[in-house]
Image 1: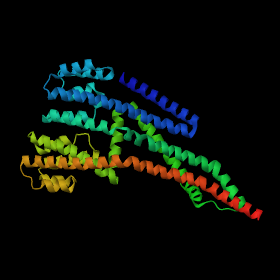
Image 2: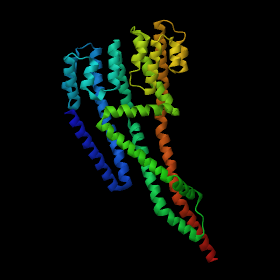
Image 3: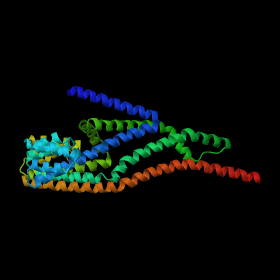
Length: 404
């Protein structure tokens, strides 16, 4: 039955994708671009709604654990105060908890929006006996994500692709229908095109086809990724996030951003586990299951393997290619309490670095994006206006000579 369902679902979405492609082709270049932009935006909107639904479930769980209330009754009471899908998720979660399942298993089965990182964190917290702290951290992370998902974030997701599509379409129309007539008129009058116009023509002829093909390919990939997120959200998240994590890791600015955030989260988790009396190799191995950058996850896994083989703490960190500060800070630590304090300090240090970078990016990205596209629009506008100005000046000079 599951195989038949999977086949029917695949056929349905294949038909849907073909229908979108045919509809876009009937509308031309702009139609294809905007259709494939709307699909990822719709997928992101649905993902944001699901993320907020999952954040509400985590908030109810954290409140119940913090107040030491019976979980099934607390979640059932919360379910009666909600409606829609959130109410259904809470009702199913309450029944799973009442059946005796652990929190992570109940959440995995009842709340599909939380599969992945949050469930892995809850599983590790249950094994380490640090569930209240982990739930509190998840609530704080969800709060920061909701704050980050503001109007500026929506602007960054929508404004650049729309401007790229509009500028490429406008320049293509200008180069096909307007510039040939400009060149003919200027050739008849024996006038040279202004340098800014000639530069735009050279760029459009040399780089234009490659740029148009690249943009169309990116839009197609983005649209297909959005459709994939809607069909198979878990598999799409694993593959797309894996690729994105590795790309962000090698880029200059994003490297420090994702590294600092990942190390802050994992080191805080390790420090908490060490304070609870867990062995260092066990704590690091559990931290590798957290939902952070894949490169950091892999290095934490190597760190745990080296620790399990009996390697000294700072040597294991060096072999796992941890930052130099981590290696040097761990070298003098001998007792378990000292190691926990070192990881706690490192968590605060990398969290402060991440917070500064995030504030800087929030303040700079929007103005820089607007300025970048303003320069391009100004360049295109000048390439259109300067020929008319040059032609008017030339005709005015010839009229004055004829009168004389």
